[in-house]
Amino acid sequence: MSDARVPVLVTGGAGYIGSHAVLALLDAGWPVVVIDDLSTGFEWAVPKAVTFVRGDVADQDLVARIIAEHDIGAIMHFAGSIIVPESVADPLKYYGNNTVKSRALIESAVNGGVRHFIFSSTAATYGIPETVPVREDMPTQPINPYGWSKLMTERMLADTAHAHDMNYCALRYFNVAGADPRGRSGQSTAGATHLIKVAVEAAIGKRGHVDVFGTDYDTPDGTGVRDYIHVSDLAAAHVAALEKLIAEPEASHIMNCGYGRGFSVLEVLDSVDRVTNLTIERRLSPRRAGDPPLLIADNARILGTVPWRPARDDLDTIVADALAWERALAERHR
Image (tube, rainbow, N blue to C red; front, side, top):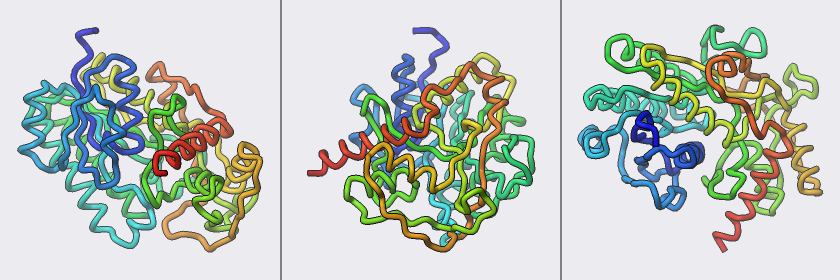
């Protein structure tokens, strides 16, 4: 193992994206510690080879102890709340979970001498972009509290990196979907709102239909268009970003994570129909609060900054992996 492979603390590592990042780190030989309060995650999603601590990332005494005991050199921060409509209805929950707790975690990192910090950010920081695809240097004007709560954390990281011996990478995710191709983890949260998760649940009979929220957007078929990225590709991007931070400790980065291509809600449902050889019932519904019509990444920066290249950038592949996981999850719950 290279000396550069410092122990990594993964917050929210029992959740959907965090658990895939843990797998990617382990596969690449990094020592990993997970902290998760299990409010939406599952302890069984954390591999046995990983030290697991149940707790809150804002518990500074606990985090200080973890950093010291495990000689943590980097933090990957996934813990937080992620449902856009809920953030509109309950903004203070999002500013508490996503912003206030991140501030406590960043302070713990500084106090513990952690040099590298990777943050799970979001394309929601852009709001409704003036042009698409969206570049990282475009204005950030979120249209919902979720996006603002993440953008505030990006600002805290930038200011902290300027004032302290730390660099960071904020990865702005577009729409994350799919599951580990080896079947080790996937989207397991009950009541998830992600379209592909909802659609594959409908395909195996867990839901009777799929709601299509908004059919009057200024898009080719009137439904919202999103850039869907496979969760395993996203996890690989985190490992590449970590290696970059360690190799160039004076530099910090903000990078989009997407494929640069968008699919509408109806196109995604067509893909699910193709993969399953079924016809999922679609119910046309009004728009949801806080949803932009079109969100596609310009991914030139990440492609030019780190040696990351998508390996599963095919919509039917993403759907097939999500479906395989959903079937495995149904077996688990029998």
